Amino acid sequence: MVPLFVLDPYFFAPERARRLPHRMHFLLESIASLAANLARLGSRLVVATGRSVEVVPELAARFRVDRVVAHRWTEPFGRERDRRIAAALRVPFDLHEGETLAPPGSIVTAGGAPFAVYTPFTRAFVAQATIAEPQRAPRSLPPLPPDIEAVAPNAPLPTLESLGITRNPRILSGGERAGRDRMRSFFAGPVARYHELRDRLDADATSHLSVDLKFGTVSIRTLWNEAHRDGPPRAALEKYRSELLWREFTHHTLFHRPELLREPFRREWLGFPWRDDEAGWRAWVDGKTGYPVVDAAARQLRAEGFVPNRARMIAASFLTKDLLVSYQRGEAHYMELLTDGDWAQNNFNWQWCAGCGCDAQPYFRVFNPGAQAERYDPDGAYVRRWVPEFGTASYPRPIVDHTAARARFLETARAHLGSRNSQKRR
Image 1: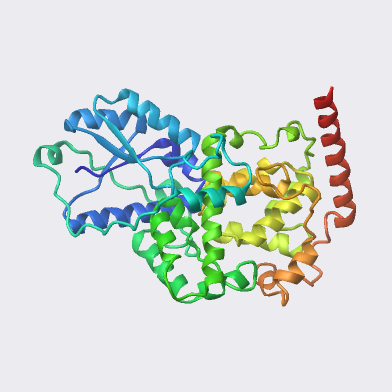
Image 2: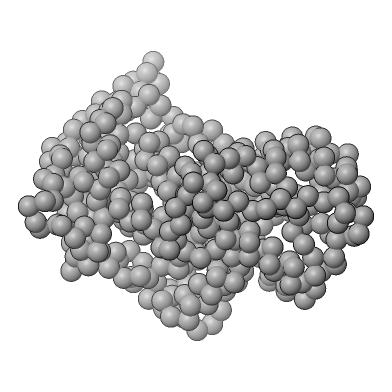
């Protein structure tokens, strides 16, 4: 067995890495942890530089391997990368499942179509999917064969400094051990009230394991089985499993509809007249909209690479509906700064909030940021943490009136959707 990691410039070129500072921070720690774990077990992580589609076939030929093994990706560019690698290899390319609980595309309607609504998908998943217990970790691994060791590349891992990224102590620790520690801590305590507190912004009640699922430092199968253990209240575990199934739903849908990363799920939203509001966009990005909970989410994103789900929804609703700025701009901004940035989930959640997505909330539901803050941050602890100047003269006035902005969005949406529906009927 020859463990290989390729430092592909698609991610690791400094100018690209700097655009993903929090994910790169976590990823580099996780690679270093993986290398240490492999060394402890008797093997070595071979680190090579270059384009994966060229490096993997070249090394496979140089090492005279009999097959190449990898995990399958749902994301379109990952699938294209794997297609090109398979075409260039002279040996079998075995892709194994692991990103999701069930192979993407395997849970479909009786007619063979992909599900467009979450609840029927979950019913079909429960009826059809069989999730095995995770395999036990190996206690040892074979060393690299001497002839391969002699010619295997040994590129050094880049440092944050070499990539031009500032070290951030607020980013969650990378690596399998850190991920398992997070999992154990969550299921030993906070999970018990997950169904009650997951939306509260003033309570640290979520698992923070989305980043581990993104990078595989904790597998989705391990987490799914952990969420079926006896102990925590049934309602809490059911709610947590429903969130894991939402993740599953997003990946299965992206598998069927890769174009969703470029266009809305609901075709009637094509050509929607989003506004080019640079001043509003800048205020939203910088956390200076005059709406404290919206600003708190913006500042937490920049500082920690993490935002609680409820705050993400409030921020997304404000950008797309109060400011009428395209969800695609918000989606791209979050993908750059989220440590747990996941293409399927991030896209799905932004489209859901904008009203144009799969299983979307009704477009006419517009979050009131004040009412949301009163309900989910009733004592203002979340806002005080991230917007300490709130209530002082230095805090900006609201950049829009929510009531007027809501009316503007609804008028714009009704006019556009009405026009699209009229065209359909002709």
